Image (tube, one colour):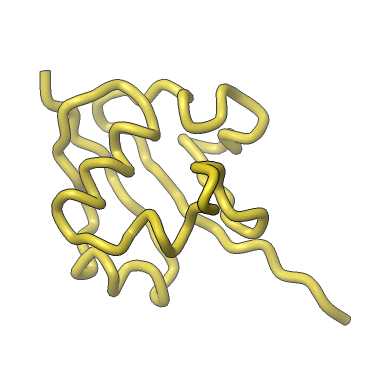
Length: 93
């Protein structure tokens, strides 16, 4: 069954997905959504994932208000209508 989610990505990443604000995809988890974005737009995973398949350290995905790092990581379940937010960690002084 297709799920429809709301995407909130920072401008430097939303350009890689043609500034889409929603996504419809088959699957149940963040990994499925990322696979859909990769298949649809290309070059998405290389920008947010390490070679070993893990998210880059400065990439933070939220399902609603919950960081997926505090849940099941890329296996975090997504419900129809969820808001998926991508935030970048900042460091420095």
